[in-house]
Length: 337
Length: 97
Image (cartoon, rainbow over all chains, first blue to last red; front, side):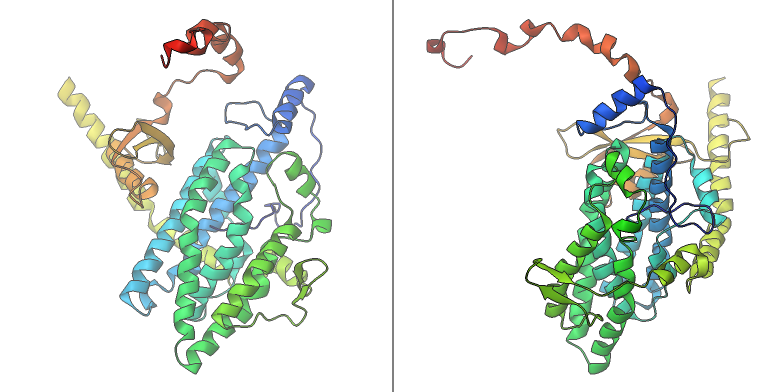
């Protein structure tokens, strides 16, 4: 499961901009607010403010796109997995990501968008997905590190989404989270195994950790001070925990895991702060992060091109299935006549 | 079926998690027809033996009550507390009833 814990505008070039307040029917708005205040859930047929609907469509579809694009970096390693066992595990994981994308697309469709519209957004490059997938997976250790750290970060992000105020999104996230722990554990276990190997294999794990660590910290999104829409997301019960708080939880959880694994995390400022009872960590390079979000990461073009090619090459299958269904129906009608 | 249809229709998926339990709604998916919807539901919703039986229903075939009318629809049941066993006082010595 993958998402960036924040929601960036799909239009090109954008850092988040504050949402404009919308004019809604005050009676309906008051009933909606009261339900949110009571920690109630909103279902598809219920009235909701347009801005709430739009924010959810954007967030859920970005999340779905992330699952689908997230299949690509790991999918590259299916044919090169070091054993049949690891190959079977990786296929199952990649299939799960596809499934997670489908749960999420369905949830977004309950808000009045269509699958075709969402896919068009992704394929035209207008819609965003998690930037973490715009980095290359150079070695087998990257596959393990993606499971351990990228999925680990995503789990932190997504457990609070199981309590999201929008029912279909929350229910999809419950399914996703149930399946997710396998993703992180298989990655960590694959790395443990490599760490019992040769010096070269151990160096490979450390190298992968060095390349992914900062990118995982950035997955939680900009610091709270630079997240103009976080407060609105919290007000709506879409976001439950702030970016910085989630990031801190992730760092605190990961440090002991790194120790057991026998790798170091590439941050000289990373140390336990007795007073805060948390780890301090260094400054994240947000310029690099935004450059990648805005299309200039190392693999943005390649990922999108691969996705579009797969979709286009599958067109005849979708057409054939529809033609088959139509023929079957016509035959049935003829027999009945 | 209209030839203009490019998107596969939407289906609602119900899964019986084990023999003896009811089918429960678990989500939706797109498929060209019912047989394909069943195949896809197997892959999307039962990758970890979550079910022993699947129902698929085309979403447009479902008629739903209107949430805005839930007051009128469900209110008549609210004041009929005598429909619940706890409405009745039975002497303690009768024991469990």
